[in-house]
Amino acid sequence: MQSLSVEAQAKLEKDTAKKEAKADAKAKAEAEKKQASASSSASLGIELKKAAKLLAQKFATGSSVTKNPQGQDEIVVQGDVSDDVFEIIERAGEGVGGQLGTLFKPVPIDNVVQTEEKAKK
Image (cartoon, rainbow, N blue to C red; front, top):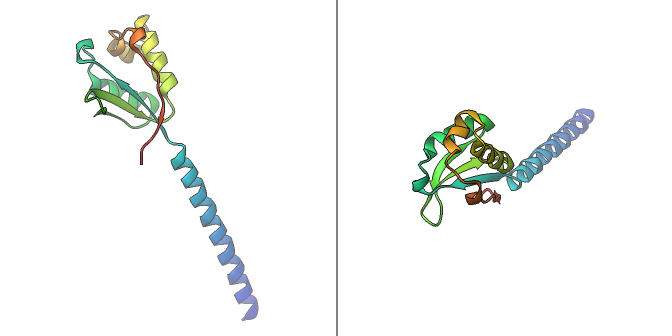
């Protein structure tokens, strides 16, 4: 019985350490979550919902249209993709980029400001 108890104790310690490591990894991942956002004036004529859907498909991540603190609609894309979104908008001005390029073509590159923020909890 005593050896079984020692084996059970070792297994319990191993399981506990494994669970703690998993919890630490999850907490670190939560702290590192990022999102990119793009807001647009209605005068540019961009279909934000369609653009959000295409960005979500392109980057295999979540994307939605929300209101920013200034009351403007904006596209929020989850993940560290702000450089890629900026590049898509930049290339759209050159007439490249497929459907996304067509959607973002009316956006002057001078109006694009690249920001990155940590996701809110």
